[in-house]
Image (tube, rainbow, N blue to C red; front, side):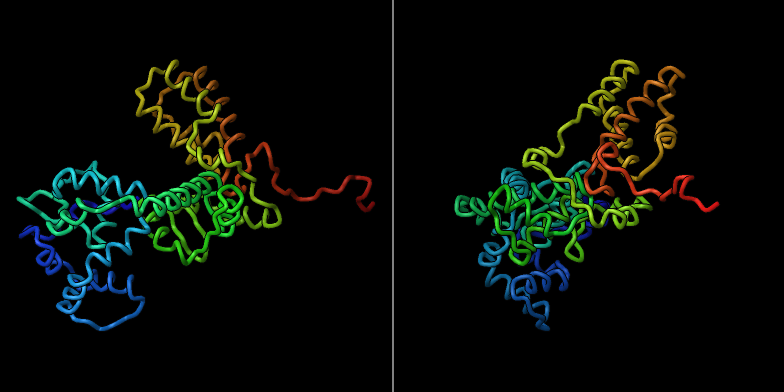
Length: 337
């Protein structure tokens, strides 16, 4: 997820829904990025030359970009089409999709009547309205499958080499995943979902919130990742029994609102991945103002969650499934007299 504010994105004053006008208001570097994405070479074109190139090849460019789109992106585009290509944006709306569509020069963020507004150029809107989406359905299907696996594995592992993704896609979907073929898809989805891809590894930025993450991984370098079933991966956001028990306690015993229960469980799970102690986790939710008896109940539930959560630093194993190497202690009988 992108953390830019609306004010950072919607800076261009609205003039017209003409594609040419909107391109003229776009920075040269942004125009050149589209040229680079398609041609994979650096040519020192002027802004006017880039605009002429984009206008002359616009539909061809769109067709190349569309093969890397997922159903999520198409749903967002469909909303824009139904709004006749104009959507006044609030803080609650998905900024990441706007950044993505602007990167591809499909939609443009502007200030219209001092309101942040996303605009589909009139030419783009007409083109999308008559577009036969069925020819992209095979691409959408495989793209959706791949991002389901990327995101699912991140939920369990937090950090993994792309060869792990290759293995699971081949094992469960018979997909031969080639990184070069799907790099645009990964670029798009990493922007939307908020993960990173670097040195052939997928990872969530907050793995670094655990100061022991890489040291722990080093100790486990000869241990395979916990093997996931297909159901584990495609249902990675399923609620576990331990989470259900904790939620029931927060609902029934403390009579908390839904959003407080959800945010509390998320905070606790994040603390577990940071390798915080149970005491530190309990201290982090002291806003609940529990009695001693309630605190003891919560401690037991949190302890159960800690021991049964699949830990990123442990390659997806729970603390109950794996024991970290400890210092060897010789028995007294082997010590020198």
